[in-house]
Image (cartoon, rainbow over all chains, first blue to last red; front, side, top):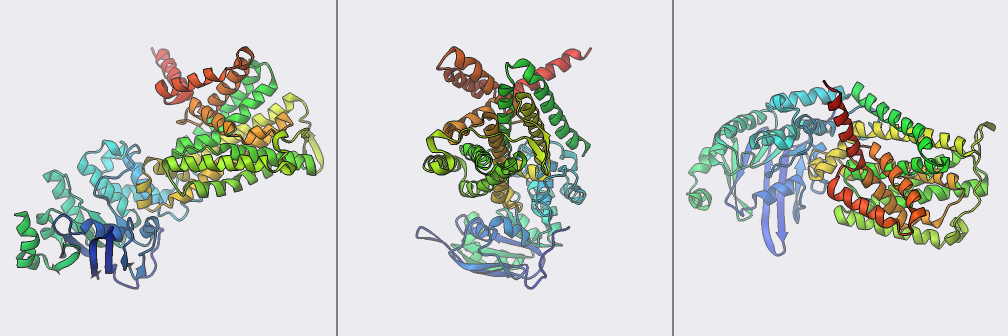
Length: 257
Length: 321
C-alpha cells in the first residue's frame, strides 16, 4: 500500500491511566494495558463495565478525562478520528455503519482511496482510474468474501455480509491495530463461524482488539482476555486462567449464568 | 474511464445544444444570457446540495462579490474582461474559504443558519460601504470591455449576440469542469460524506476539508456567474447580495433537481423565463413560482431533470419493437 506508517518505536497499542467521567459518573477509573504483539486481545465484562467507553476513548469518538493512548509509540490521545486511521488505528462499528446507498465495491474503494496520498488533489481523473486503489479494493473484497456482491448497494446486504464489509473497510489502510466492537452481534450461527475464522486470521498480521459478548468465541481465538468491571480492569490473562478465576466468575460469568 | 469522460462531454454537448436553441425560443439574447448566467450560479449550489447535502443560504455572497469585483475593476481601473472575470472567480473562491470554514464548524440546521447569518452580514456590509459598492444605488454605467489579449482586440462584445456567445462558451466549459470534478475521486468522497459523514471520518477522511473545498468550487463558479451578470446588466444592484438572491439560486437548484448537474440549467431557465412571462401578466407572480416549488417538493423530488429522464426512458421504450 502507498500509505506508509512511521517507523515502529513502540508496542502496537499502549493505554495508560485512561479515566472518563460523565457528569459525576466515573465510567473509567484509570485503565492501563499494553499490547506488545500481534494477536487477538479480547475485552469482556458485564453491561456497564465501561467496555464501549474504553473503545470510544481509544477510537477517538470521545476524549478521555485523563490518560494517554499510544499507537506504535505515537501519542494519539488528542488526534481527531480521521487522523488516527492514518496513524495505524482502524475500527469497526457496533451498529452497522456503511455508505448504504453506494455499492459494496464503492464502499471499500472509498476506504482504500482514503489512504492514497493523492486523495484530495485528485480532481481531474475518473474515480476508477487509480489502479493501485482498484487492485487493493479487489483484494479486500476477496478476502472478506464479498466479491460476488460488489455491485449491489451496501444497504441491501445481509446483516452478516454488512459486518464483513465493515471490516473490509477497516482493513483498507493495513492498520497495526484493529478495533472491533462486537463484530458478531445479531449474527446467525453460520455467520458467526465465518467471522470467528476471519478474526483469528487477522490476528496473525495485526493486533486485534475485540469487545465481545460471545464468550465462546472469545475463548476460542483470544491470545489474552481482559475483564473489565465497574470501570477498571479486574483481571487479565490467558483464556483458561480467566475462565477459572473465581472473581471473574463472580463478577461476570456468574452473573450471566 | 471512457464512460467517465464521455459523461462530462455528454453534459457539455447538452449544455451547448441548449445554448444554441435557447435564443430561438426566447424574445431576446439578454433573456437567454440571464438563463445561462443563473444556470452557472445554480451549478455551484447543485454541487453543495446535490453532492454533499449542504443547503447554503450564502450563495448570494459569492454571486454579489463576483459582480462587485468586475464592476469595481471595470469602472475604476479599466481592467480587461478576462482579468476582471478571473479576479471575480478568485475573490469569490477566497471568500468561500472563509464562509466554508466558518459554516462547516457545524452541521445540519446550524450550518444552514450560519450561512444565513453570514449572508445577512455580507449584505449589510455592502450596504454600509457605499464608497466601494455604491450602497443602495449599486454600481452604475459599468463598461463592458471587448475581449482582448495582450493589447489586441479579438472580439467586440458590445452586441447582445456577441456577449451571448461569450457567456455560452464560459457556461459550457463551467458545466464540463464541474462534471469532471464530481466524477473524480474527490467527487466520490463528497458522496460518501453525504451518505454517512461519521463513516467517512472513520475511514480516514478529513471531511471538513472536503466540504471547504466544495464550498470553494461552488463559490468560484457562482462568483464567475456574478461577474458575468455585472457585464450583462452593466449595473450591479445591491439586490445581488440580497437574501432573495440566495433564495432564487436555491429555488432554481431544487426546481431543476440535484441528481444531475443538467438540472441546474433547467431550473434556471424555468425561473428566469417564468418570472419574465408572469411578471408582465401579474404583479404577484411569485405566488405561482412558490406553488411550483411546492409541487416539486411534494411530487417531483428529482426536480425537472427527473421529468426529462422519464421522458427519455419512455421514448426509448416506445422506440423498441
